[in-house]
Amino acid sequence: MPRETLNRDQIVEAAIELLDEAGVEGLSMRRLGKRLNSAATAVYWHVGDKGNLVVLAADRVWGEIELLDPAGTGWRTAARALVQDTYAMVERHPWLVQAISTHFVHGPGMARFQNHSYAVYEAAGFTGRDLDGAVNTAFTFVAGTALLDATRAAASRAKSTDVAAQADEIAATYPRLRERMEALGDVDPAELFSQEFAFGLETVLDGIEARLRGEGAAHAVRELSH
Image (cartoon, one colour):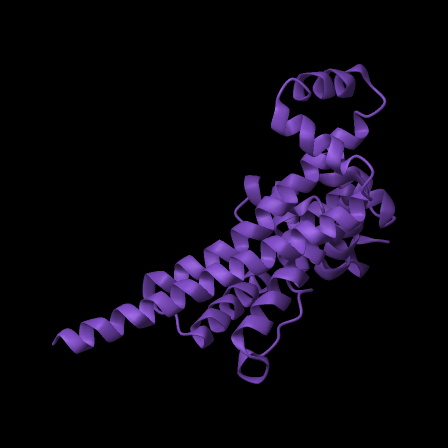
């Protein structure tokens, strides 16, 4: 595909496919050019360097998240859906966690997501710094879960190595770890994760809602004291 028939959208979409397959380390202008049947120089001409391309790709995938209107669904339903859809998007694009930890991702996709996050928790009744706190708490839950996934994936890859046996041997010397390892030994990992994710999400939302109720109660007390 010669340079004049390429455009930025085609390159970014192809980059996302390559990132999904090979991660950030596996993305190169040469490999991308080969996929597009074009010279690497043509790719550079449209999107700049690899770092800028990663930012463009990362911003694009944020646009995949469905946004529910909290006015129609209620803030908690909209917040739950936002966390679930964000996590599903990260699962589809596991390279994203690394990308946002090493690059400043900005653009319409990220701005759309952030703007909606504020709209959801504004609908709940948060303002000012508490609004920032609610938005960041929900996002941190998703990011933390994604990091846990990476840890689990590393552990799964190590199952057939001496490293895994050593880790199990060390963990078995600690009674609480040993007890949980034995209790969860026969549980399906996918079912366990689904339960853990649901528990964590509802706990976060419960905490946010309790904070909101507490602020309301404190405000009522202040009003009565005047």
